[in-house]
Length: 259
Image (cartoon, rainbow, N blue to C red; front, top):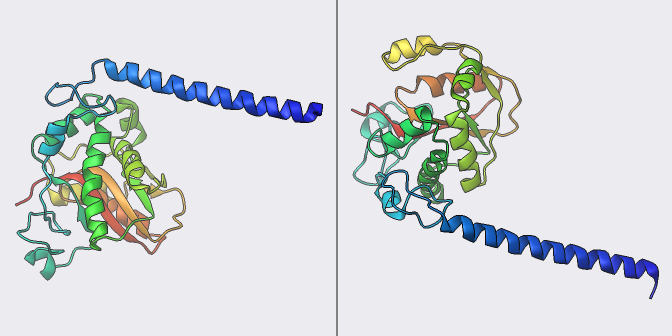
């Protein structure tokens, strides 16, 4: 037996043993971690696995109406793309949401944005992914080539420490196998929009975003946590459309002010 053959055989054997040892160690660590408390963020009961941040009962209780208008997200009584109003005035962009701004989604979003509970983004993204997969499977929605999170201004990002829209987009990318494209930046540090009406929101956000990278695809989805008047997403969409011919979708966890 040559020295070369012996050396290569030993290398393969050592690599195999090392890989098996690492796999065994990973399984042991996971079992140990799963034995520690891992409570549901809503009811505080134990979840099935430490990767889960909601128990199955609370997951099942998250609102997800069967039919929503793809223009304004109002509930529909049967499957159709748009409500009567949106059929009369077709929306520029399709709007995909889980539900209205209601409990417990409202509490989860608040905890994500204002209580630094970043892990909630995974559960919210999983919930939205269910809606998206259903629409794609039923040929009601084209699969986007990229997910584009609504960017935060650098000062707001420094204050919060993270962008909740980016966290949701990253989790959606994992669930849907669609890459995230970080191609925009927020150049205006706009004032809070909580007390502004639709016209004031549009004025507040005018020219707030800038495109900083090219987009190679032609179908993209803008990602945010809450959709109210659409001013933020529509202004970002307008920025994207300045240099590209795109089919743009707006995805958010919830839709507020549905009348």
